[in-house]
Image 1 (cartoon, rainbow, N blue to C red):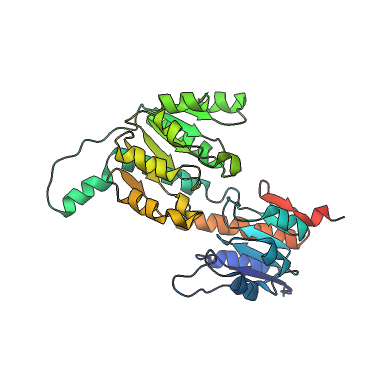
Image 2 (cartoon, helix red, strand yellow):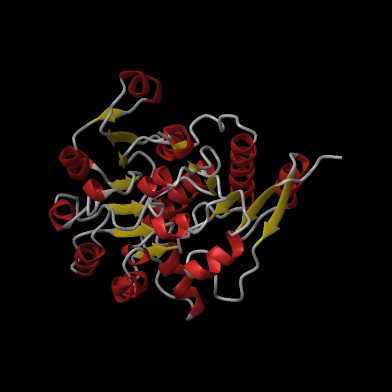
Length: 336
């Protein structure tokens, strides 16, 4: 019998039994948070989170905003395992100050998000949404779409998800341009890509797919000036983070016919509620295909991410290193 003396609280939804079984088999007692309808860890108050986590050694988290005040109220907490790969909502300096370990689920969702990226490209270019709406209202005119086959695709960033997108794009005989701060000749040769500056990528691409991290220097990476550099027939795809695109500028470009369309899984209003009306107007446009930041939300993708997060928790609580690529901050290692 394994003694369960380590407490793990899980606040995101869609936690599978295999993940719970893994944690329990590694000496953890597991509490899965049950939020009322319309509530989740992203919109829970700090007081609600503190009540849930006051006795926790580890927290598997979805989209909660994690502040210094929250961490100071949780002195027992040792590890915060993000069920995903973005960590912009976690105050890393606060994690260091309060001696917490922060991990991500590297390798968990990249295949799912890469699939969603291609789905948005194809749906926007083939005008799937518009065609279905015509059928709902009765037989209408056949709408002419555009091929992805043999087109030029610009990929901004070359992390794990972007590399999986590139792999899929090769099957469409596309020319792939990549802009990244750290180009690698090895990657370039093995993946059959061409490294270019951002201006060249925007000017040449029929599709532009964003896979950059969100940070102060990448906010509005795609703004009005850069949208103006794109072809009027091009499609902008964003499955990375809201805020990388100036959504007001994107809305204006689409309404004015200066872009062919967009496929969007993320929106600026996720970080700034004042832009909710911009999001609503964007998703109502006929040449926009949109999903609610759900690119990673497949049965398989969430199971993989759950498993990685659980392995991170187990490793840290047992005094080991988390799986490769998962450690973001080790506050416990920088004690004076």
